Image 1 (cartoon, helix red, strand yellow):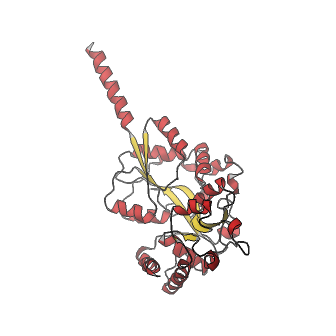
Image 2 (cartoon, helix red, strand yellow):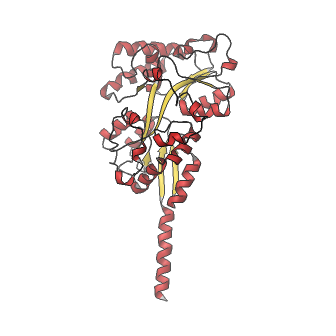
Image 3 (cartoon, helix red, strand yellow):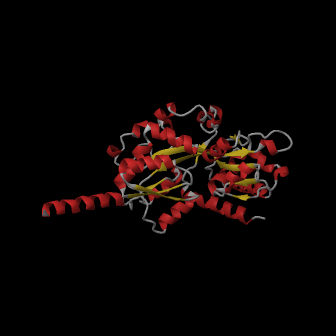
Length: 342
């Protein structure tokens, strides 16, 4: 009888421990399909809690301040370089991620951690523009950054509230690299941004989605996946890839050294790299997951996304944001000047 009672207590304790397993994710808004999360929870008998950030810089600042409650984080490649250099990231155990070979080698060639020692590509995205051409008077909208100079749209436009993205847009409009260290080029980009600032309603990272949908804004600078989600609901939203080129962002999955559930974090990475799951996930969020076998499972509608089927000649003009080391201070100075300008 005592043995049965002990066994009952042990089973209850085991089940309680399993039920208590919680995976804490720190990522961008609307970046993982809720159905995918539910499937993972069911398969692994756990709970997934998601917190969101709106910029790499705010995420990094939280970690620098001592955040230790996250098991899996989704930063952009350039910020991963910074986090790795500061010893924040755990090495990955490839034996626990058998789906790693599904990652597109062409995408790996664009990131720093090409062996996936501490990071795994999750999405590839562009910061591009979208317009409500049905509401714009005059000539048809061209795919160019120069659209932000159109005074007729003053007060009806937004730029991303992101230093590297918006300075990068201004640099691209001038034919310069988004990773330039040249102070004269950065000064010229500053002047462009100050000129654009006079036309925009605000710098914005979230409201542009509902704004372009409702036609509160007629031209917005935003992330390709976010804009594709809006376009799927509202065909009047037109996505444009500026002819001068755009920033190319690769967000990746990393496990902090402070993670309390590293095994579960590895399991989640492997789960979202499954071709069927990756296809479902990318169709929901509108971003391209660089998973080669998954592309055979997505719908023809998804492939119409301009940021997924971007022409080769435009791809050649797109650049990955790099970690600039000490030269980042040059960008911070420009951004402060732009924000202070009236």
